[in-house]
Length: 292
Image (cartoon, rainbow, N blue to C red; front, top):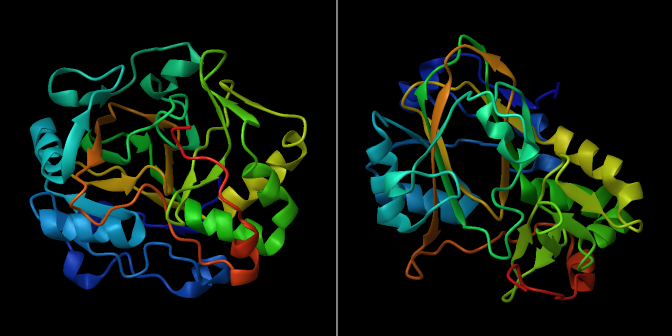
């Protein structure tokens, strides 16, 4: 069970956006990193502000999603919907307990999902991940979110040797034997950094990286945020910036998911800008693109 740095304990966050229920002080975040500080909650039709939030901080919190089609409409407004292996018409994946047993389908169980990025096993994952709750759980099932930039910059401060290992090309096999061989952090053209991550049976770390995994796990732990799964509420994240997961649950929890790539005309980038010291970032020499 993860311990969270920030947690909201009821579903009022979908109805009281004007009260700033997600306002948290910097003391809740080691090093003062962004952790939903002052984050507004947008109606799913508020395209301009949703795009602006994702461009600025990698995440937008949304509400008012009454149908799966609402999520598809938002995704189409932001860019091009990217079908998922498990998606149905319109690119929507309905995530609920189906009694799945394989690690590749762990989302279709009631088990907890460790924080991860979506489609880590393909060369070029979709940039946008949109999720909303269609039916709430009886107990548990909180949404888990982790700011990848906060984790990266935490490692830059506390364990630069580990961070160097996690940015080394071709040291992590994501998605099993036919997956993608890459790294946890990748320097992108233009100076952005992308995160690609999973910690489950479908990932393998090179011997040079494996000793540092416990350090990465601890850094992720320090930056976990959880939100309750409330009907009609959800989020849009930059999949190259934020990790997502969930807590174990009981009851009829159902989530809608859509993945997309943003239009080039939007200010959304595939990654994040590090806030680590200029000294360290200067040592972060470009090595490979996410699709390399």
